[in-house]
Length: 374
Image 1 (cartoon, rainbow, N blue to C red):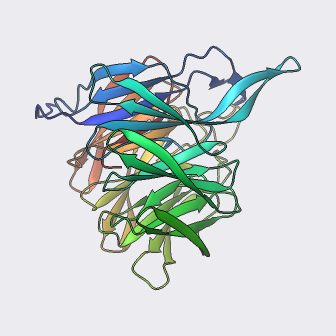
Image 2: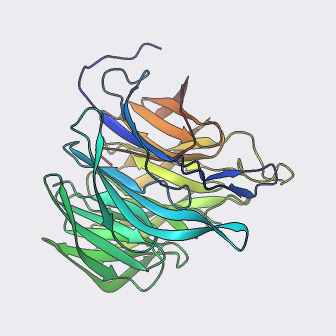
């Protein structure tokens, strides 16, 4: 399959976590080698043969939704949150919450770290608004959302919004006047009001499916879709859903659930708004003795027409796919396969997704991935 060459730079960033892997019993294997990194990749010149523009030695983790990083709309900076660290206590390795956010200058060659901020405890899913002047971070261990001002390449923590329950990810509406945070153990989505730099939570929540880990918003601003993981961040052999939220209703509310498969985690929306994809874990990092273990996982197409979402086709990818992102033209999809240390490239053909069978090898385990359109 021949890919077009545009010559226009289009960046994606990939968090590589080398602190944690999984054994044949599905148990986490931890280490303190500090070999994590952030890869900056250009998919614009050739979508099927991306080039790596740089690699920064920065800690990040698979422990959380695969959206702990973001690129500003103008591709000038990237943000990367480190949710947890591995430490040794009483002779045993354990994961403990971190509180750092790294700011990376993407305009230099290679990209460089320009600042490190202290934010909330266990910063996880984060997003930048379309205007590129505000970012929000869900702090899982603090039950809060950090608010950050972006002025050029200067990022400043300006506020913290108390949610009162654990939140895993937070996203803006396209017009930037609202945001939503997934209440992971609460099975709800919290709605936030955004007026300029002031972000408030007026205690309005919408009930969604079980364990909403991750979510996206349609470019039209009409709906949001949550990935309802179903088992606290892991597959379990049971069928799970995505929940559709009507953002135009007053107040917003859940209007549908679509049954898609076992363990949705990564989710992405095409910039065209006609297609979303959800990644199913399918027990690929579970014990090989488990009835729901599979060698390979899959990606499910979700066809979007106005506010109606229907399940489309499903294609296989590789072991423990985490992050997923569309190209800016909506024609290609990049899926990070954690267990296999590579990226699967899918192509959009009409309302179907097709595996190109192109694999991009990586120097470690991809825990997260994001592009500039989010």
